[in-house]
Length: 332
Image 1 (cartoon, rainbow, N blue to C red):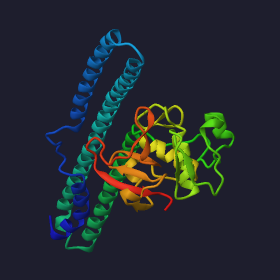
Image 2: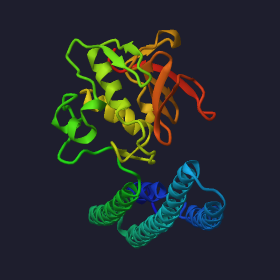
Image 3: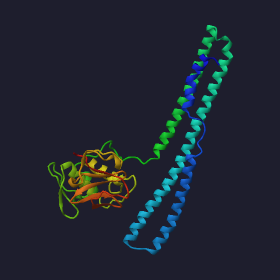
Image 4: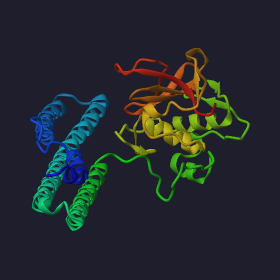
């Protein structure tokens, strides 16, 4: 090939380079996912056997609670195993898509080089140069079509993967946070008059479960605390966003503040919004944020959080080895 042909082939070879080496790495991610799925299914089987034995040997309220929690964990394990198989299948398809595209581009590059070699004797003439440019444009167009098709296929794989990830909170018929006033018809239908205190705009006081009263920095924070407290006893559900049925930690705080008219991000570690607050200055409505958990201060040294179930606990900064990010006031 002449120098001119090399320059014309450069866009095609650049496209081919973008597809990588074309060699599958020695560690197959899909195989690793499938192996993990097998382990998850074995854990589920062993857990089911152990749970059956436990149900025969242990009775009472505590036993019922433990069995219920264990059954949810086992169910989540089986769901994760199924999700792992689906992700593995998509990973295999994605690999095949990229390798197939790389093979097509390699054939296009080889085709152009073959044409360029056949035109070398005529390159001293204008007609030869024009034929070379035409061949380069034709092959580059074919390469771009391959790139567009591979990109489209990979976007489809990405959409399928995204569908396997638990969705953020949604409220039927709503596109934003619920802004119903505390004590309104919606709240009364769900929780009853006794669960939610009146919330006039100037009322910053919050009555805690032990009967003591705490004062929030503003009415919005107080409303968020009241709504969070209304969920005491709600079961913990990973990814849960349904009040009264199942909530996770960030689902609880996001819903409670959404009811007060403040929209929070979905994930716990993303809820470090607003003003940082010193530990000795926390007030009702402030959020305690870890890198994988979040709780809401309710006052008088206590906070409410989605354990299993949602409950009021003493304020702390340690949580199962998670990194503590600090206290934050979303309304400040």
